[in-house]
Length: 256
Image (cartoon, rainbow, N blue to C red):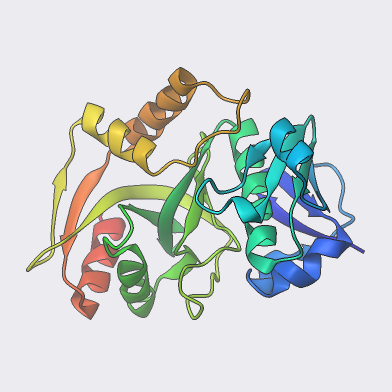
């Protein structure tokens, strides 16, 4: 029996052959036995990588072409990859992206932590401190959705994912309500300041996964980012590498 990953109202059904590879990279609790019906489904299957397949589809990672490529065919995401856990993880991420986009949302390079069901979504460039802030927020009583990849849906739902940057940061929460979005910046003390709408949209788009060719246009993606930023705003969140940052984040969410 295959496995499935739930993302909002959607389900990614993963074929049997990919499961052992994904278990080496992804959080097991997110890979549930398949067989449930009634939700929009995306079927993820894998085939050997080939130049012909790469020409038909798109590379999973332009910096790592050895990971192979993916084709999106209606409800199917067909990965042409080597038997490698990193390639399998990239293929599952592509399927999650397709599911989130089809639900009208954005998939972000982001961390998210929930306090009493209300989520703080943390965006920022690589090395800015997303995982560190997530770790400190968990220590302050939060439930981790992911420190690596997060889906934002137009309903205001934040979807966790089976992906992680740090192996010991294990997601414990599948979904929460969007309460705050912050752009994390390192600094000498904790503070927040609002970001103007045009800049907020630009920053969100910087951290959004690029849609597969022919799926969602750039203007549509921009409109989605504007709607999500308009829902709760975006704040510049300056913090130290300190447990105090986690407590400050908790209080900021609880004040929303």
